[in-house]
Length: 106
View (cartoon, rainbow, N blue to C red):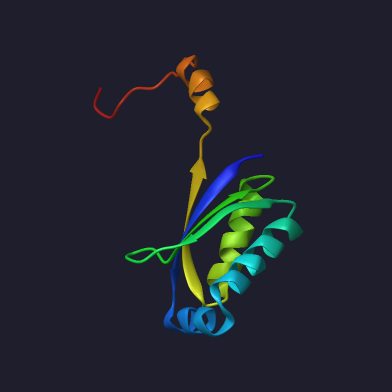
């Protein structure tokens, strides 16, 4: 199943809610959301700096991963940057590909 990294930035409202509800409760909410979409929460970490939480999930496909991110974003509690993660084994496949491409001006 494809893996996705959600880099989450909480709004002021989202941060207040997280502090009131607790960090574990928010992680459990994200786990439940992922499972309801046929996915699985692999990792959830809070951070400080530009990103407030890093979340790694397995999702059935890109559309499902996007739907989860859009739903969270529309809630107003957080904004999310989504990164599709690539398994090391996929690099072997990528290395063997022949791609017909010409760079601009080339």
